[in-house]
Amino acid sequence: MRKGTYKIALGGICLALTVAFMFGASMVPGVELTLYAISSVFIAVMIIETGVKGGIALYAAAVLLGLLIVPNKLGILPYACLFGLYGVVKYYIEKIKNPVGQVILKVAFFGAEVTAVLMAFQGVLLGNIELPDLPIAVLVIAGTLFLLLYDVLYTLLIRIYRERFKGEKQRNVRIHLSKDEEKDR
Image (tube, rainbow, N blue to C red; front, side):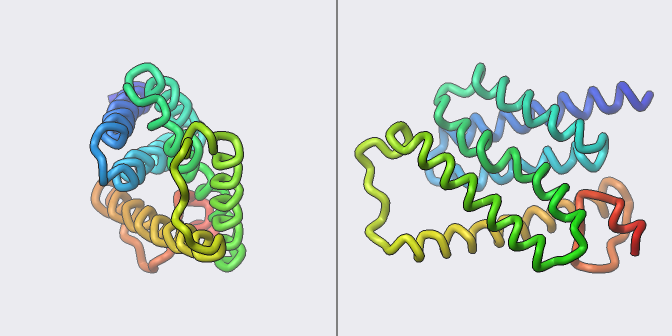
C-alpha cells in the first residue's frame, strides 16, 4: 500500500474509533472517563504514524464529526477540551529533556484546561449541581493525581503500540511520542 493511502486509511480508522468511543462516553453512564481516555489514544497513534500534523488533523476531525454524530453535544467537551488535546500537548512537552519540567508543564496544562472549562461552561456543565463539599486543595490534588495516572497509562499504551505494531523494543520506562529524543540518547 502506498504511504499516502496508508495515512488516509489509518486516519479514517482512527477517526471512526475515536468518534465511537466518544459516542459511548456520552451514552453509557459510569465509564465516561475511561472511554474518553481510550478515545484519546488514537491521537498518539496518528502522531507516531504520520507526525504531529496528522494527530492535529484527527483531533479537529473528531471534534467536528463528534458534534454531528454524538447526540449529547456536551459530551464532546471533555474530549475537545482535555483528552483529545492531551496527545499533542504530551508530544511537545516530552521534547523537553527535564522530567521534572515535563511533569510541571503537564500539571499546569491540566490546571489551565480545567479552570478555563469551568469558568466558560460552569452554568452549562454544572447547572444546579454542587461540587463535593471538599476544600479546593483536595479537588486540585485529586485532579492532579488523576492526570498523573492518566499520563502513565497513556505512556504505557504508547509503549504497547510501539512494541506490538511497530516492532520497536523499548529499553527503558520513559516512552515518548517523539522519536527525536530517542535519537539524541
